[in-house]
Length: 399
View 1 (tube, helix red, strand yellow):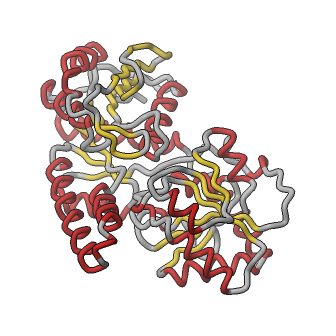
View 2 (spheres, rainbow, N blue to C red; view 1 turned 90 degrees about the horizontal axis):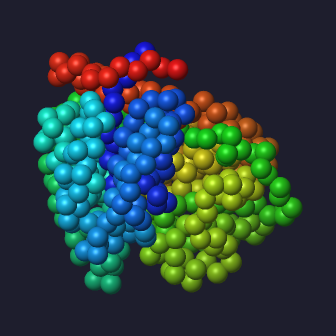
């Protein structure tokens, strides 16, 4: 079967976040399946190189860049690379341009697509309007809950308007769960297709387990920021203690603005900083259960990684992670903070249920492959080209 040639411009690639992880996996998929692929992404130096069927063009952000998060920047003058990128997209013979949001690389990709009259695919990875609302609310907490919530709601409404304006520029949008597919479609009036996520079940596996302690280890992996609702971890620890539980410990992986607060309020928790690769996989395997209190995540790559490692997962009812959980089988979807606490307590007091869920979680994760995800994305490209009556420039037979 033949597939379109894509110029892919993600806003983040080398950083530690779900968008970057998905972007790296997409590039690895194209290389593995010998599919021509142009990856234009930020890096420490501006350089171009070929890796099998993958062409990589890295762009270094300039001194005017603004820090948005830990190791994540925005360069308002990235359009200075427009001619360079346009020439590379033309040389490659791209059929479509795919961007990941309204960041600096996304804006550059939108400009190139319109300049060359190529179909534009925009994937929705992050609900940035919710992030803006949660962060402003946290920052203004000193002003009292009423004012901070009102400011947060205003920021969220303003952010959503900006996102709607940007995503209406897409010929096709992609979203990571069914709820968001419907939401983005209603918001923009554009066609929206599902783009889920996969997991490397070879890297993340219960086989890496080498536990020696008899304490139940409760883990969290992700950014330590307000939009991840990480302060709830301290509430959870306190509630479990009040319920009489003592033989447990929290392992917290990641970094962010809330780390200082968490260290102060969870003095007995273990903070590892950011972990990658085999070190992260070994950490997962040596946990007993995984908690993810975020209410803003659109998918939750770390949830799948935890499940692949044989961990039952407790998530909130808000956002995309709930679609990964079969309640009572692979974990729990909590409708409230108290329901979240009860679910964790149930697993701490029922070793048989915990073991049963560990097995079921691993089985579910083993059915979630990256190849399936990205072949579906390629088929979405094809559908977009058919709708526009645009012939593919180059056909490639799948190996």
